[in-house]
Image 1 (cartoon, rainbow, N blue to C red):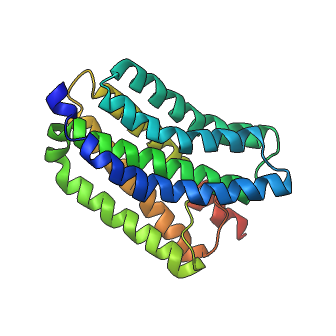
Image 2 (cartoon, one colour):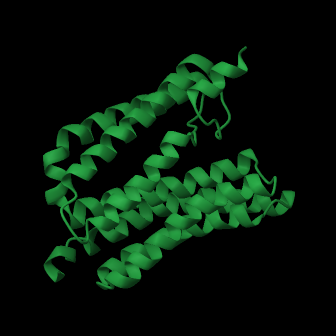
Image 3 (cartoon, rainbow, N blue to C red):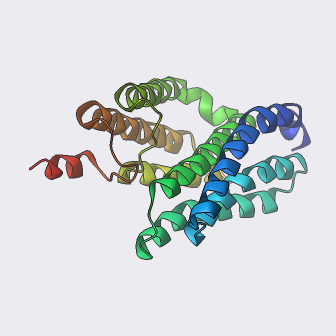
Amino acid sequence: MTRQFSGVWPILSIVCTEQVNALRMKTIYWIRQMIRRNVLTIPNALSLARLFGVPLLFFLVHLEQIAWFIGWYLFLGFTDFLDGKLARLWNQTSRLGSHLDSLGDVAYYLATAWFFLQLFPGYLKPNIVWIVVLALVAGAAVGMSWYRTGRITFVHTWLNQANGAFVVAAFLLSFYGDTTHLIRIVLIMASAGFAEIFLIFLRFGDVHPDTRTIFHMQEKQF
C-alpha cells in the first residue's frame, strides 16, 4: 500500500496550487457575491463544502487513511446529490448556485480521475481507447459551449447526473475488486452525456445550466 501511494505526494503541491487553489480563488469571489446578495443558502454552502473539501482527500491518501478517505469521499459525493435537490425543493435555484455546483463538480471529478490513475491504473489501461473518446467528446462539448455562448458552461443534464453517480460507484468498488468492465460502461455513458451537451449547445446556444435533456429543449420550442 505504501508503494502504491508514494507517487501521490510529490504531485500534491502541484494539484493544490495550480488547480484547486485556482478554483478556490474563483469561489472566494462567488462567496463575496453571495454575501453581498444575501444568497448564501444551504444548497450553496453544500457546493462550497464539496469544493473546499476536495484537498483533504489528497492528505488522507497520503496518510493512507483509507477508511477516512472513503467516508469523506462519500460525504462529498452526497453533497453533489443533495445541493441541487434542496435548491429545487426550497425554490433556491439560481445561476450563481449552478456555477458553484459546477465548480464543486469539476474539483471533485478531476480529483476522482487523479485517484483512479494513481490507485487503479491496471483498471484504466484496458480502457485507454474509451478514455481518449471521452476526452475528445468532452473537449468538443466545452468548445461548443465557448463558441456558442462566449463562456464555458457546465450543464447538469439528467444523464450527466446519473453518470456522476456511476463514476463514484465505480471508484469505490475498485477498492474491493476488478472494475475494468464497469469503468468501460461508465466511460461510454459519460461520452454519451457530453455528446448530448454538445448537441444542446450546437442547436440551442445559450441554455440554463439546469437544462435536463435535449428533448426538454425541443419541447420548449413548440
